[in-house]
Image (cartoon, rainbow, N blue to C red; front, side, top):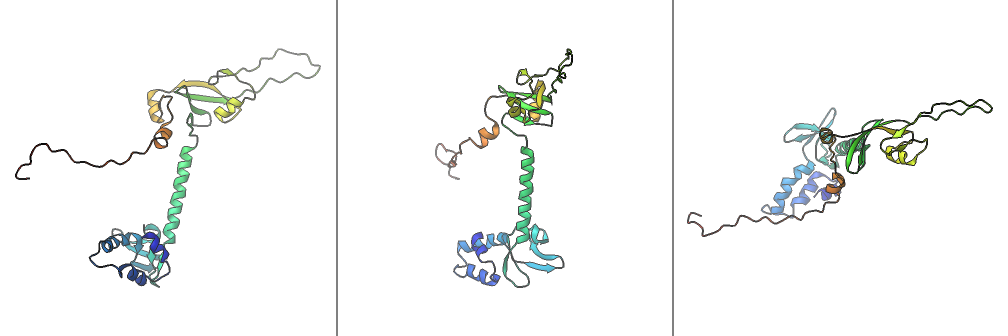
Length: 238
């Protein structure tokens, strides 16, 4: 129905309306279905005001074209069926805003870690979630000048609590784990039950619920409804 009406864009609404109902009898069920669904597809009652074209809605009165659900409307001046471009543009803008919000929510989402801030991340190690505090990798000790007398200089030592190894200037494991090579895990703490609930996490080695439920779960076939089984004979009043 929607596709048929979109193909009739540009024709007068009287011609389109006549073509819809001419081959149908008044007692035809298809005619009743068209009468019931047509107001949801086409805004037939429209008026032009100073600020543009308004459509008459059953519940909200006169509304601008951008605020109605119909994707087609009848032009009040020419009487032709036109595409509701303001509503289509508004829908596209809402979809872009929704996709942007979803993208912002998914920033930092990975199956094995979450990013809470610039220096705070959540990592899952052997099924256990930890809060990891990051710090800058200390700079190496300066080398003495050529010919100068060597002195015993105390060099900063750092140990990565998550990788369980000493921190060096360049390490590919840190780049893949934290997203940056100049950071290392200076603190590691296991999340308690309240924090797990707050971040919607679970200590388990199974795949994430997003993958396990929404992607890997097979679709159930809808079963046929069967009424209750009645035992014995029916009463007379039935």
